[in-house]
Length: 123
Length: 108
Image (cartoon, rainbow over the protein chains, first blue to last red):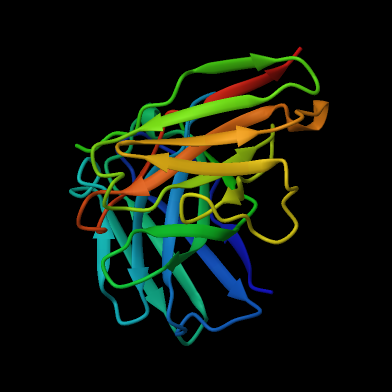
């Protein structure tokens, strides 16, 4: 059973860069899956941030694309999120998840999630 | 950008049937997925591929699809089903993920 665990600073200053890591256990990050980030502002809904394949291929939410970088470290079996130029609107619980796809050309969905980590943007 | 539209809230009495809809232009081309989220917890997948139920999810949860609308149905609602429910899918090319705005299910 794959498990995911987010880690990183819980407080980031405005205009700074948010950096989070998701450690994967119980499975290899080099398996045939995409690996995703999803966030949820306090009291609001879920927002898809983006995803990465172990080859390094990425897909990003068009609304965040200019500020987001997702990378993978196969040697550590983990993947990471960087979000630059953050504002208070980026305050959210950030989840990492293993993405599954039914066939080539279908979208991702998520059976396995991390517990989530709250990141607050404040000076 | 592509959007999925859900009603903000649905209320039912225990034992009744709750239906939560989700509309999106690409739903005829892409599967829909449903998640249950309780306060302080990560989402849990309750329906995949429009109508399939993962193991461990009660039979009272079901999904259906018709054109640009998918529906999550909870038959015989129980108090423990009170939660936020999110539909999720992708754009027509399958590249970008998208979540609906969420529906708060209240069990009266």
